[in-house]
Image 1 (spheres, rainbow, N blue to C red):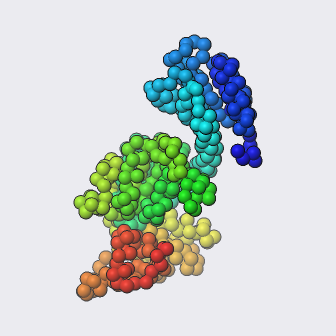
Image 2: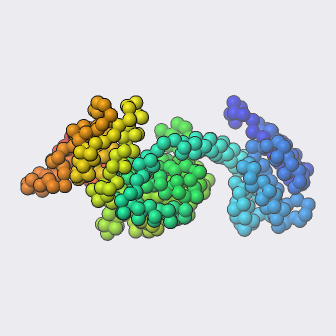
Image 3: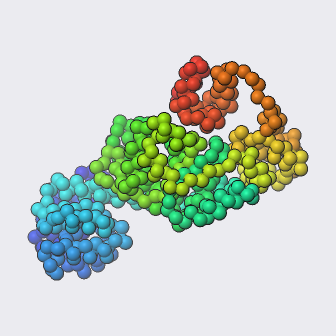
Length: 461
């Protein structure tokens, strides 16, 4: 045992003095500090007074000898202590074990115990308790960050379409139903996810976001479920997974349509049961999250093509919200632009800026293929370039050729496809994931086209 670690204190709770002595000798030999309790009352008192790191709790004290009900009653009293508890009994049964685990126990050991099994369970539960404490500290930081300015300030719903969505959101956000958000790239799906979380009963807990398209296949389990140190070659330290970080809060899966088919069963299992294993551990963990997903893909078509599991889709789309493109909600453009102006003015330490009437007219007449995200880029550039406190139409630097009235040049479809891909790669400086988002196709689909047209790209992006 590593003696450099802080010495853990274990409370031995058993009415049999010989049992307590045997456990005290075993645990002391393995560098644990021990305290003892011989009655149910002493267990509660000593756990509150000594704050042990772990409790070995006998299931039967003086009241009876076989039912285990006394141990379950003590377990109920200790449920708010957050101390890991391993149950012990000479009258083991699956039913009793299930009851104890349901009430918060970490493990179940039958007497007479196997030394190695008992010691391994203690080490594992102490490790999980430490990780949980680190996790809680991180979650507190995440919760505090909820008070900081976020993209939710750009949630604008002045247009009739967005007002209808806002009413729907207010109705369904307080429930725990899974929500699927559909819409073109840049329409604000992540902003809507934040809005749903803020109006939910979980708003005091973190909203954890995951870009499914950005997770390499070989890191999927580690990213979502976490891993133990040494679980694989590069696992040099323990990692907390996104499901654990989001426990009791909300989990947002962006680009969920890009999830490879071979990884979908692993996600389906945790969504159906709430159970998963940290990579490198055999201990089953439980999670309680509210799932919000988003995609610009046609999931029903992916199901027909055999690229997406229908049972997974049923888990995701309990409720569906479709965000309209910006060109269909032009009433919201001035308010969205004003929010962006305020945000970027603070970021770049600029004086208060306003749009003139011509600039507003130009913004409303633009087609916005990149939707709200594109509007944000245009306003950011205008804030940087404006001298004085008025943003004019000229400061917007909008290409009038991208207006809704633009005529498309007739050319072979393959030629047009190649030009679009080259332009997307140039616009994103060769970043495949971002280029795929602009083109509204999956990352793998873009890779195939890059190879088809022999367009050079960085495989790591």
